[in-house]
Image 1 (cartoon, rainbow, N blue to C red):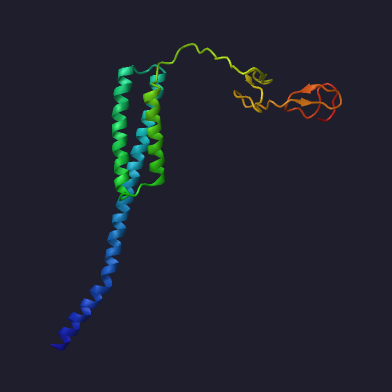
Image 2: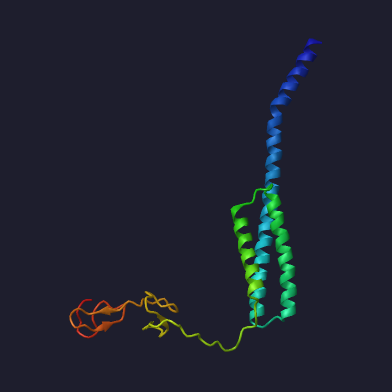
Length: 185
């Protein structure tokens, strides 16, 4: 009888010691499932965002009518918001910083879409004249820039003038030697 009691006591101690190990393995499997579910949601969200971007491009190129664009965009937006909500709940109420940033970007884009609706692109774009009194012309592309600009707004070339100290001639920015007299700049 004493042997049976000692055996049951030993079995209870062994079960007590092994139980945390079993719980950890179950938590590990549950963690893997959770990560896989989160990865699937992130992939779905990326797919939806890409689809919305491509939809907008197709509309701007004239491949979609305004009605089709509006309908498809609203469908994608509803689905994307559902996926983002699921991602928020997957994190047990803790939102990851990337989700917060993406949500903020989406909110800003939606706000811009409300205030500045997308219109069909015109075939001719007329440049608006700059109202500043002084302008500097880019030597590379010919674009007019503000007088205090250091780089061209169109091509990015330097607008800094390089004057030769020896002869006073103006040289283009990438020059290291004067084109007129050959002196080092």
